[in-house]
Length: 182
Image 1 (cartoon, one colour):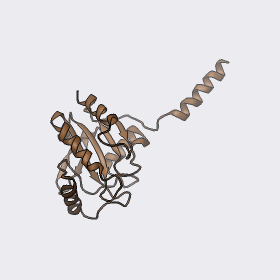
Image 2: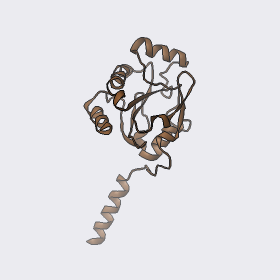
Image 3: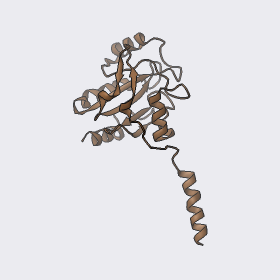
Image 4: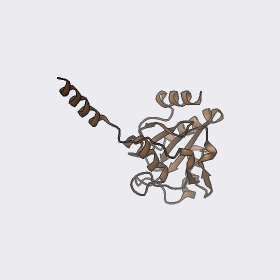
């Protein structure tokens, strides 16, 4: 009986194990990424902040979420939240030029939170930040579509991830952000 129980528990653990290593040899703050205007964003400048990292696209059904990302930024930036938009054409729904994306975001959504240059977010050509998130948090950190959200805590580790259909101002996300900001 004891052997069957041990075998059952072992099988259960194999099926439900996380594929994330979570060894965090590096933290989010150890990376850099290029801004939409070409300057380097040194993520160490965001140390001790909570970051909502979102891959974005101009031609996506979720593009309206830019409004709510801006609301989050407006409501929580003074408390230590950074919203970091990462325009990506990984799903073939983004403009070709950074200048066009920047103008689109400013004109249509009055965006003033930080945006990066057009960046790959999945696969072998993904930016190192997205590879790092996958390596340390598992497949839930890999964007399945545009407007996938990765929440980074003040320690520079992935706290949680949210699918594209989860609105940035949903209670689920806002409560997590508020808890991390406290």
